Length: 446
Image (cartoon, rainbow, N blue to C red; front, top):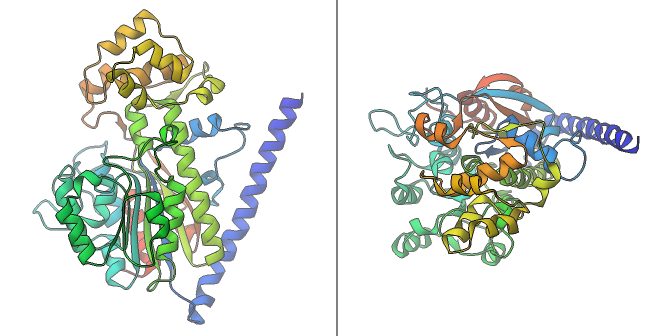
């Protein structure tokens, strides 16, 4: 009886949150015109991209978080809800480069292509259009800053894997703020070129906190930042911290700003069939959204859009789902795999991180894995299955899927703030770019 009443109370609380945020959204819709009449500043757009985050990943994060499943994630309380198709020019299932190009330029390209036409000519991005119109610009990610999603907003290349070339492209595009991982793609000569352009190079969280107003390049890992389950002890800033600092650095500059924030490791957890990390990384992404919305309500001239490039992994939540078991997992499948590759016995490593004792059959399944995500994929797959979250089988995934586990399903689009009603209902991912550009008053190529 008490549990049931608790669920009802949580649901009522969620509905109350929705009502409050809706009221705040109407308030922000009314503020920009008056503010601009008074010369109080320009418009801002903050685009959040949950890489690999569809409705199913959001659902998993909701049920794994502390509290009742009836209580939504913060992003789910944003007052405008739409959904977007994600297909690429050459495939019904997109990769991150084609999807991010659509979100950045309003154009479809083939998988693997970074904001570039078939003839090799660049497609102008919303970040470039905003920059040329006097806006400050920024990119934040938990992946390498040269990875596909951020690259498509500030670089042009026929190959998303050309990350050293993409780093050099940023010297031409010159976003004001670049925060993420990927230090391995910036040699000392490249870093010196950034310094010559006035960038403060922040190698760690303390350097980022101490950065003065101006251009900042923050590189906090050689490759990707850690999954949120593994972040303790790394010294790496959280996505929420990166988002807050980016807004601080961009706010009040120029006509306003355009900022893209990517929760990139949700996708990697999906590739690894790692349900616990999907939930934790989605929750970390949600905290960053909450921080940005809190600021945007005070600012009154900001449009916040939350979406995904695609979903990943074919994740399903079964009637066997063990919520408490998922909450007990203390390391990502990737980190467990690193321990095993470092010499730790597989069964002991999994038991320590998850509380699950693998069977001999499960150990054999992990040992037999031979794919680009192995053995993290096999570890994630067996642990998640034991906890009642199922995915495409790895064999099917690697035999048939060019994009190694992405889905072609629609993705959510949440929005709040000025002109957010434009994002209600069905749309294509290219429409998102054009709607944001219209709010900023900049032109994208046709």
